[in-house]
Amino acid sequence: MVANEQFEAGAILYFDPFIFQDGGIPKRKYFVVLKRNDTEIILASLPTSKDSVPAAITKEHGCIERPDIDFNCYYFEGGKPVCVNGFAFPTDTYIYGFRIKLFDINQFQTQQSECQTIVTIKGQLTDTEYKQLIKCLLHSTSVKRRYRHMLSEIHL
Image (cartoon, rainbow, N blue to C red; front, side, top):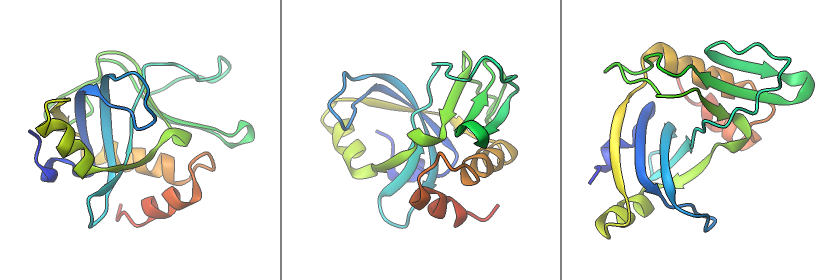
């Protein structure tokens, strides 16, 4: 079982399976913790390998921001180490600004204790990678205002 302390900002976790709050079919998913409140609530993203970057945009590892078309994502190039321990996503992976949301750590703890999911810690984003990710999301209009406010509280 992953302790609450492992849900720290910058952590990359792997859920097998991730149980969606909306009742979607559970599946294996990566999970990136963006910010943790003093409570048991965290702001996080479920990154995806689905490439929704418009074809006219050149992809380079890092922030892709196009306010003129209200598009924002953070692109992790597959195989490029992003964590202190050298972890790299196996395939190109994306965090889309409009898809970040709040999660309750206690819910994850319950799922683990009831053997509904297994959570594995894959690594901790490097300081540089974490800061670039937060800056990317912080300045995007595709991120909900209250989430941008939460991100603005992070000392970069």
